[in-house]
Length: 493
Ligand SMILES: Cc1ncc(COP(=O)(O)O)c(C=O)c1O
Image (cartoon, rainbow, N blue to C red; front, side, top):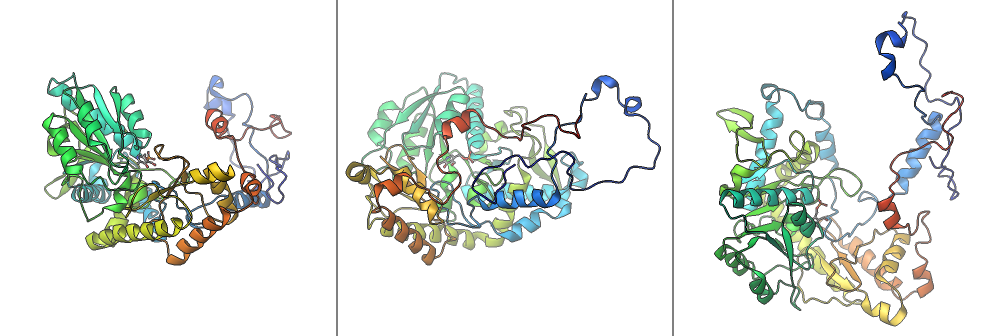
C-alpha cells in the first residue's frame, strides 16, 4: 500500500494489531475448528493480510483512485478504443438487485426477465449488423474474433473443405486479428494497404486462393477510413467460397448508416464496451458478442437464448456448436449496460451517435492538421491518424514524448505507434460525447507543446508520480497482488 500524501512511495502501511473493525467475541460456545474441518484442510497460519486502520485504508484507495486518468475525469482520445462517456443511469440500472444478484444457475423459469433482456439484446445486435444469428458469450472483441474463426473452421470442416487454411489480414489490422487466426489454427497472410490507406485490391487478388478460409477486415479501418471497395472485396471473397469477417471495433462510425451484413460480411464481432458504453480500459470487463449469417448459426457457441411461445429459454440443442467459450451468458453486466444504451437511444439516436462521432473526428482532424502531418486524405470516419515523423526528424522528439507531455495538461494520450503502417502514429478518436470546447482545448495544447524545448518533452510527464514505466517488464512480470514485505506480524504469529 502506498502513502499517497507525498511523492515518496511508502507502500507498507501495515502495522501489527491495527484494525478497521473489531468484532466482539462470540458468546456462542464453539466447537474447535479441528472438529468441523479436517486438520489437513486447515492452514497452518492465518493469511498474512495488511493490518491497517480504517482512515488509512480509505485514504489509500481514494488517493490511488485520483492518480488514474479516466473518462470521468479527463478527455481520452485513445484511438480505436472509443472512450465515450458511460451514462451513470446505466450503472444504477445494472446494480438493481433483481439483475445484479441473479445467480447464473437460476432455473430458466425464475430468470425470465434477464433472459428476455438478453434475447432482445441478441435481436438488437442482429438488426444493427444485418446478420441474423447472435452469440452473446465472448467476453471481449478479441474473443469474439477467435470464436467467429472457430465457427468458420467448423463450417469448412462440415463442408469437407479442410484445405482452407489461410486467413487474410490487412497490414493496418489490430494485432488481435492475426493472433486470433493463429490461435484458431489458421495461417495468416498479410494484405498490403495502398498509398490511400485502403486495402490494396491487387495484393488481395494475388493472395486470395482456393485455400483461403476467411478475410478479416476492419471497416472503417484503423486509419479511420471507410473501405470504399468493400462490396467488390466481399464479392471477390465469396466468388472463391471464402468468408468475410468484419472486425466491428469501429462500429461507432456506422451505426444506423450502413450494416456489415448489407456490404457482404458473413460474421462480425461487437465491442459492446466501446460502441454501446461499458466502463473499460482497466475500468471494467468487456463484451464481444458475434453476429453471423443464417448458415453459420448452427456452429455458434451454446447455449443461445431462444423464445418458445411466450417463454425464454436456453437452447443447448445445437449438435454442431463449437462449444462454450465463456461461462454462463458472457459478461452480463456489460451486455446490460449496452442494452440500456440501445433502448435509450433507439434507431435515430444510434444514427446520431455515429454522425456526431464522425463530425467530431473531422473537426479535430482539421485542428490537428494545423501543425501535424495527416498522411491520408480526409474526410475521416470516427477517428484519424496523424504522424509525428517530421518532429522526430527535425527535433528528435518522438510521438511518445508528446503523449507523455499531454498528461501534464490533463489529457489522456492518443493511441501511439498504431497502426503500424504510419510512422510515429498518433491515432485520435474523440467520440461523440465531447464538446467543441474540449476538442479545441486538446488541439491547442498539442499544437503548443510540439514546439516546446525537446528536453522538456523527452522528460515528461513532470506532474505524475509514475512517469515512464518499463511496460515490457510490467507485462512480463506483472505484480497483481499485495505481498507483505515481512510475512509474519504480531497478529499472524
Ligand atoms: C480494431 C480492433 N479490433 C479488435 C480489438 C480487440 O477488442 P478487445 O480489446 O475488446 O479484445 C480492438 C481493441 O482495441 C480494436 O481496436
